[in-house]
Amino acid sequence: MSDHLNKHILPYGRQFVDEQDIKGVTDAVQAPFLTTGPSVAAFEAQLCRLTGAEYAVACANGTAALHLACMALGVGQNDLGLTSPISFLASANCIEYCGGQADFVDIDPSSLCLSPEKLDVYCREKQVPDLVIPVDFAGTPADLPSIHKLSERYGFKVIEDAAHSLGSEYTCNGNTYACGSCIHTDMAIFSFHPVKTVTTGEGGAVMTNDKTLADRLRRLRSHGMETSTARADKEGQWYYEMTSLGYNYRITDLQCALGLTQLEKLSGFKSRRQQIVSAYNDAFENDGGVILPPKVLAEWACPHLYPVRFKGGVKIRKKIYDTLRAMDIFCQVHYIPIYWQPYYAEKYHYGKGMCPEAEDYYSQCLSLPLFPAMSDGDVQRVIEAVTQTMS
Image 1 (cartoon, rainbow, N blue to C red):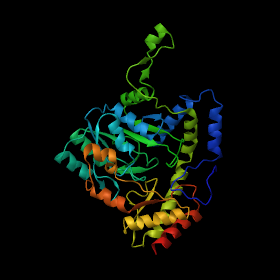
Image 2 (tube, rainbow, N blue to C red):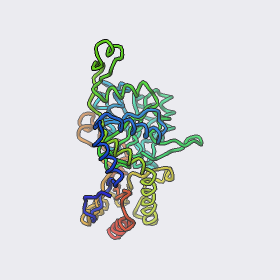
Image 3 (tube, helix red, strand yellow):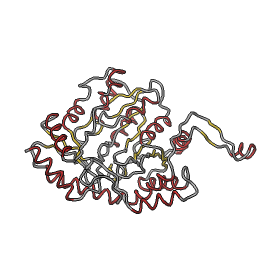
Image 4 (cartoon, helix red, strand yellow):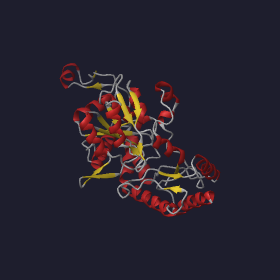
């Protein structure tokens, strides 16, 4: 495995790259296409096979995927989009990119995902949104079937932010669905950042079962350009037209070659992540000062993060964070409520107290290291460091 980091340093997440991955990229470098070639199409096809979605459009990163999805749905000026406050900034920013307004629905503390019940209340008491972006948090799927029912009742569109949940599954009416399958959503997005379950370095993808949306996504991914067979026959094979304003959100063949070999290891990555989570749970479940991550659908989830909570709140969380950091164990906080960010607080006058469950979670949470390359000794080292710090 390629590892240029100090062996004694444990980050909260890290890619796993082996000789198979290196060979895949090396072969791609020597191939005729370095970008927008066969590796991109092969990677998209494999994502479809893994999720069951009909179409995949790979792109530059997860943020680009969210932006493309919003544009493909026609999100525009003054449209209202709702998402979870406990997510990375991009889950809300993509709405703002399109000229819409991002607002937030509190989380369900049992899953740490957007609460369908609170979403229903928002629709009834405030305003029906144009778009809802539920976030699969830390590998736990959002309650997509319930949100889908609300979308049918109220008429809003749904984009699943599955950046944390490649490899996770959920059940509905006795059937099992993969996150990203788009059975209960209009679209879904993935991220392939190095800390995610599989990586392409940087990269993302939008999944959908709607051909019209898929065609629109591909066009928007590459400058809004498309070719016309009739005009090309008349003008020349070089002919193209820009029919809408798009972006250069393409992904390279080199990245997708890495993605293809990474996807082959997905089941192994999932198994190892589950083993580490199990070890953490066994170590902390009888500790009265610790709240374990949600066990909702645990057997179906591919854990992305291990967001433990400390009942002592901000003070004990800061103590553990600083102590472990001094021991070269680098934890992280996922996440500061998005509406606390100055952009949102100043533009919309969002303030503290807006989503109490999200704020309570934020005050206690800390993500411990979780990635497949961790040895059993690494896991025990984290457990001992946390236990000693709390004693």
